[in-house]
Image (cartoon, rainbow, N blue to C red):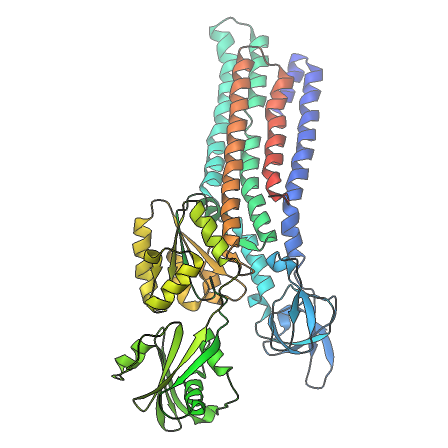
Length: 548
């Protein structure tokens, strides 16, 4: 506006019109680029369900707002409809499209007992779902909240540019006044010449390119991540990804699938049936994958009424009173801490020991399958010069075996860890790190270490609620290779920020000098501002391209 009024005052009507015309053209391209970057967020917002079909006890179906549905209600979800709340399928089989949540294009099978996430699309079968969470706690609601609030957590680069513009803009206006008024007063008295040069200087120095392109780069990166199933909770966490030299993995549910199965049973006293019965009594209230594997094994059933007492010691085992007998189910250390001698060699694999009335009666072997991309992820991290550690509660023999399969150095496999040990171990690892440390986990016990790491990454599909809340980045499909994608995204974001800042400042400084010397005219000044802004914005928007 100042430049246009000034050009009119000088009688340069063509240049006055040119300033406004090219500013409007520049704004048009800027708006187009910004709108393109917003599309991924808007697409994410479209997964918000508009209604839920709730079935009452009489079989009547009522359409209602998802926010009014209660835990335990039965939902009817027809083909083509979006799942409104998290739940468990209780009737029917279907195929589910989870691409909007996880970035995976391949549909998955949903059958009775399968967990189902809100925001998924039911493709081809009518199903009944029993809700397990209210709408505010469901996956779709939490994803939208996380992405919307990500903009409030600004990176240092964004904060610096905002602060820089606050002082830079009035400073260059003052400099333009000095050029337009001060120089002719103290130098040659040619007010028209220097006033014209001051207007050119003013147009060139406008900080649009910096103020717009840097936040847009972070916004585009967060949008790209959300589209690919990587929820980054703020620009500050994205910025930290550029300086990482250590990644620490929890084992179960992170590098492994967390779906255990019983593979072997060794009976020391009594029958196999009794061993399974007592093990199930101890694990009856367990939410741990190992406990669930034991509960799902065989056809031995127990009654909750026969369990008179139950006390779990996290990371060790369970002490229960069942049918008048004292049951101990847990690790070898747990039994030995109760003065029960286990006269057996240390077993390979994950082993659950069982004792009844202070007498060791047998052990149950369970195995966990390693995720497909775990080895690939670790190999690529190591190829980038990043140290990789694995934390596990398994014994040393088992931990070494899994570490060998995954390609993790033996001295970086930390075994026999209780939940509280993970905190001290991560502190020790962080003290060796020269840049930054990522911790990747999924369980309730991982929440303290997720919060303590420079960047905490949690598994969003199977991970616990508290782990997701404590983390800075959530991987929606539990694929560890998404860590590599997140690191690449952080590096690409940093690269684009540096490109934009360097390009914008470089062009402006050169054209400013040319303007003061009288070599650059108002048209070149317009390019130095509007043209550079458009190019910087388009450069920021390229992060959203599918190729990246």
